[in-house]
Image (cartoon, rainbow, N blue to C red; front, side, top):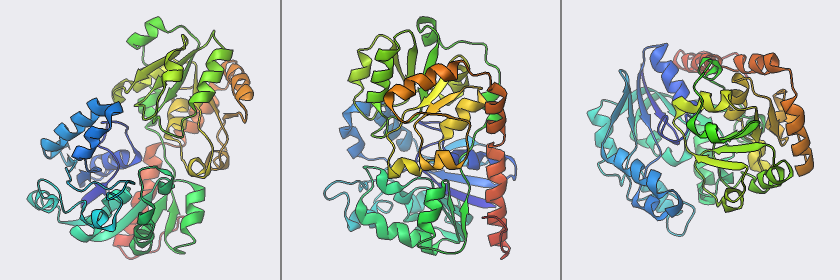
Length: 390
């Protein structure tokens, strides 16, 4: 089969998303041909001075054309003259309708040259790529909703109707969190399925003896955060804990999209930046606890935290603020409501002897299980059958 996957980022460029894991399984297990289409880049990205380096790299990556990730997997990040964004002019209906048609080179021609204007499966995990449903012929269209997308500052409210159209016209809608399931069932009653995020268990559970170079100057115990750093990241909470627990080292891995100057001045906070995906197990296995310091709101309530599973696959205890999805999956997490309780729970987590429980929880949530569930839905749609899942 030919499968076109539309997602938020290039595999392993910033973060290895669920869509990237599914692409690997569809290629490796079933031998399908995969074309992985990422969020378009534009000259507008150069105005984001905070991350100018990585945005230049993204544009350069786009200019090099289609990349062969594996023997049967090709990856492409288009360059658009009309980027969709929640800003004047860029949030207009015109931009929404032409973001993928005003690309250089023409996206349609790129897909035609690689024989992907007609596919068996169209899997869309990114609303910003919705127009692909009108460009590419497909037998089955799956809309995968991974967040409350209008909680992202980038997403124009004007796209709500497009989001609803995608929900209604897809052959099936897959969601990663219970609150998203509840939301979408208000728009569509049938063929809505809950498949949360997961973990590459073997990758994060493997023993890594090599210590990351930064850790040679970072004393234990090391409390690690790994992932996106945006408006939901509670930097004030980290600052509070770091000041109250100066004997602990707080390690932050990820690409900052917010100002972290309040943390950068603290002696026991180490902002290590974005790391290659292949190096992440080493950072986790030589840490002592993982934290998820999110500001809890309706947006976070819909988050299925990949980092939770990755922390636990490495055997780390996890401290987090409680939110709806996290509580509903019954994860063995040390929950903390207040700043002071967050500090107390970190101390408690470091005394934990339940590593086997964390590893077991992660193993039960491997991406292989998620792949089997998604593949069953797809095969049922291709064969005109009813799927027995949720």
